[in-house]
Image (cartoon, rainbow, N blue to C red):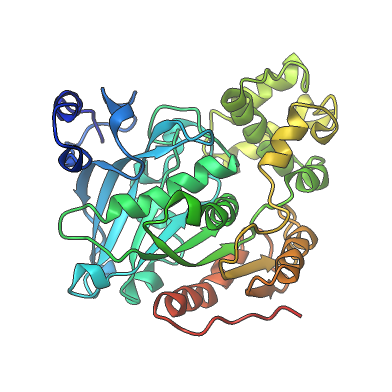
Length: 400
């Protein structure tokens, strides 16, 4: 699907001898189609590329009803420690977008949990646009859409699942990359849009945007069912099979990203189940759930201790939680009142903290909606809010 090309080696070699203003922007290379998972490492010399730099792009065929053009992209970003890394993703340009590239506003989509195996990248799906909630409405509004896979999905892993800053940087840098595709361009005005894991990424991105990407102008962030206080959510859901599946993804990812072994927090039998869980993508888990539920490690004691009670796990939970915003970016937050995975009370506590800090928050309680059903209910209002923010509409808040 994607591949490394020799142009990166050449670009890196030439870069050192070029004037700085010319060397900073090597031209991206068109991609050649290869099987999924073909990217195995960063291009040679990638340390000299800037965050958001577009490295490769390739047109993809979209269903005609979208009335839009699409590209699969490979671009530079940074991980949670701001070290250079790679991400793949999609860019969608509506046919009805403004004719002048600089008038095209951008929405950066952050996807929900798809799994932590490399094959689970949304852009690797047979119909990758199905993973972008609200795409029909966004395209109808003439908005350019980016959709990162996050580093480690579609590129060399591991993925930083619920690692806030790393995912935030990938979301923001997808906007920078999209603006470099010939014929796409785009304004420096953008908004953020995410659901579940993506909602978590969006809240982090909203707080990081001003310092990380001062070249862009963030107009607002919309999040559906965003995990905020990860310690509370873990304790509230660890008794369910679904909660333990998500904990398996989190523990495995953090163990690899932070270099912390799992052998203290779970025993060897649980580790084997965690490995099994993480070999699947979420799309496959529905039919596997009964099999997983029958396994004793998922039925009995799962964790040896509460991660919030012992370092380094407590530090990881704190670092990757959002108890309140650290910026004044306007927010639209929608939350299902019957959500068993992201508890409404936890989200509401974040909203109240944001309101106390003077952040303009439009909070929508989705009555009787669970985690899976909340997104469809939230899309119309969220997309209208995003379009309004990008078109200079009044900032609305229902903080009390």
